[in-house]
Image (cartoon, rainbow, N blue to C red):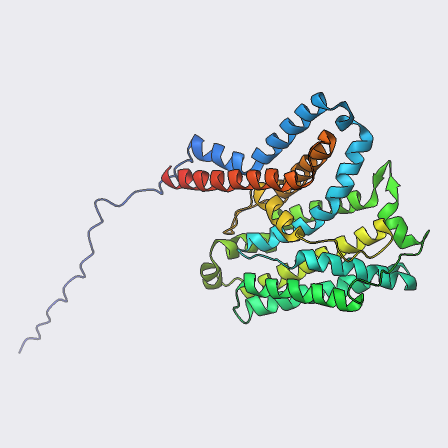
Length: 348
């Protein structure tokens, strides 16, 4: 009997797809309109700032003087430091309404602690204000509470602590004259005050942090979409906690520098400062919805607001309330422009 073996059928190899591309298609280049839109969003405020400075220098000769430039930049340096922290928060899609009260609290604590020396005058406000920012971050990131509600509560709490600490504003703490801490706020290098130099160093560090580190890229990712950032394995909660802590630290530092400059802890400062900081950040091109922004844009936004205020002072016949009108007008224009540019980029 013969053994008959049947050959197994050969495996069928699937035919190659007819429409499969033989190589990876290059990504389509962005349109010129999209590039121009991004450039306007990032650097448009700088063009406006330079235009305003140029026109003001012709109309008011004293505006272009070196003394006036020093005064404008010193005044702007405190808001700039606060707005730097606000920029990081807004990029993540959050908001910090507590910075004005934290700024005032930091100044009072610095003036009170200055009797024990330079380090105490700096460390006490940084620790307390940083702790307020940390609590904000924990409630927002861990308890999933709304940033608006949390930081609004912190605004009221910080102002309440300030009033309790100063007996409803009846007690004013003074910074010792000729102390190292007073020199930090009133001293200068080449005619430019230390607060200006500190603000520039912080903005330089903030720019490097945002553009050259993984932490900065995480901020953009969290602001673009928290859920997507979580799926990517990014530390979303830790990032939010850090940015709110940094915002509190920077607001406290700005308050301490302001107290050193004024030689006292003034209780009425910082009212509405959170709105000025938000305005500067948004005018500088950072989107309120998060996911996009720049440190340099915030700096130009702060300087633009400071120049507007100085121009109103130069006119003389207008009071300071007109600054709010002009700043609000700029803010509306910028927000409308941002919506238009975002819509045009989606359609291109």
